[in-house]
Image (cartoon, rainbow, N blue to C red; front, side, top):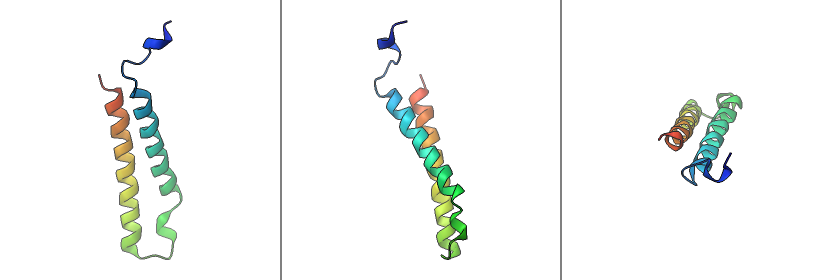
Length: 68
């Protein structure tokens, strides 16, 4: 097995790693239950929307990195 030709693009592993990290950060943010803090409802809702958007960007980056 030729390890040097494992990835066609040298940045593919970086895109996959960063995308997976973004998804994990979003899941950790949601697991931290931002709506339980004493902030306003609007701030909590905005944080949840931001976490979901972060997960979407991360999943999109992984998909884009893996697309041929």
